[in-house]
Length: 239
Image (tube, rainbow, N blue to C red):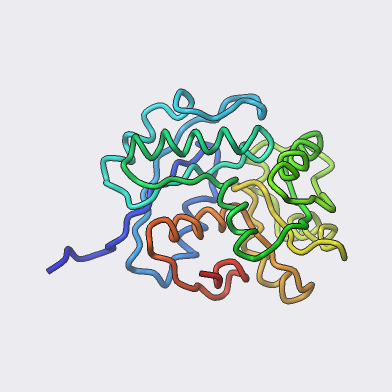
């Protein structure tokens, strides 16, 4: 007889300033009693251009390895502008260290766009506008065309991003729904755009790929536990 409780264990590496990852993931999995999620935290480097590697994560991956996860994710999007190849190297390190297949939020978004058969995207980014050309260039290297972008006028720290209200998030999202776009991508796992995604999809007709949602979506696929989840937009209904 199997042990009671969740049969599938997911491991998530969360930046210490992120207050969205755990609560959003719990909400997304409210109907999935078979899934357990385990978190380990680390501190982001001060510069957005700094790559994330094993030296930044410290003991966080090895602490996750102790629960013997079925899949692991780095819950951050810096690879979207620093380089997805660096995220792939990080995934190899995480897989070796934890014994489980690994992804990152940035790679999960790219996989999600492929699953939705999307190549032309509008990007919503809550960080500095100066990062947007780097995102466009990196996406172009992977066959994705950024046709529009939206970012706040003021530069926000990660905790400030998490405190943005629904009206502020909606004001960021709405300009991204342009005629040339096939999907709207929200990059930044502390931006609480996932809670608005389904309503915007219904109103404006384009799928919204939130990076925090994409992270869980890809984790479930890697763990062999993907099932449609309704109420959170088109991606979570895509298996």
